[in-house]
Length: 314
Image 1 (cartoon, rainbow, N blue to C red):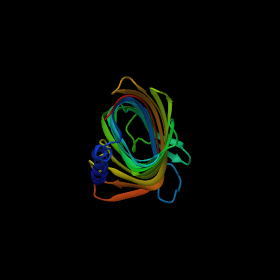
Image 2 (cartoon, rainbow, N blue to C red):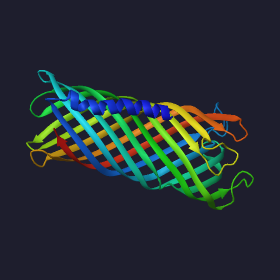
Image 3 (tube, rainbow, N blue to C red):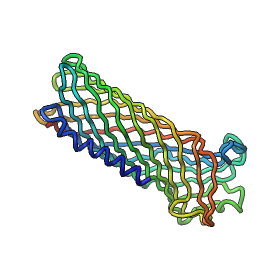
């Protein structure tokens, strides 16, 4: 997974560095953003690859993952002919998780029935990373409207931590800890989403000092998950199991900026993302060296960000 991160990070870094070069004698701006972000993530696995009973053997959910997010964004638009401009953009973001909840449930029956194990845990630690870059052409329709089709590449990662656990249901004593605190719990799950995206960006000048932007994107998803279940002595460490799946996602963003003076702009934005991967693989690495597996039924991730930024045109 580290190799994917290096390659994608290098591509997006090249985009960010190229913005000032390609954007010479053009419309360029650099933004620093801070804001609040809320994420939810869940995944579940089957008992085998065929979907036999139980069709959902285990399910993990992370709810209300609240974080403080910081981002840097570069944009450049260079005229290439009348009313058409080359567009290039890049974004890097990091969020520190402040709070969140986790639930881990296991079932003996189909469709989440006959629950025999459940723990509820604290998920208020970890980090979130966004890397994305892309380009396209901006079509200037008149003095107030422009439309920009875009294509690009992205890498999103959620580094989730599970601590301070409590076993709520323990119906199979030989297979679960007893009801009570899970002492020493410090498990990790790293979720990575990457691939190409297609988008459309619409800009509207509301008045002389104010602009509005609406953008929509579709993402092709390659999903990878990696876990370290630290209390499971029957599993290997630091990689206890891995996930792979494919899927897609969508994102919508609404932004407004206001020119405070001749150089600086203030902006506010709302961003929503909804991603899903399914019909993948769940590979388990046991401490005795053997490998087991089953179907990764689905992974769902939803994120909502509210941000305020300071933009500097140059």
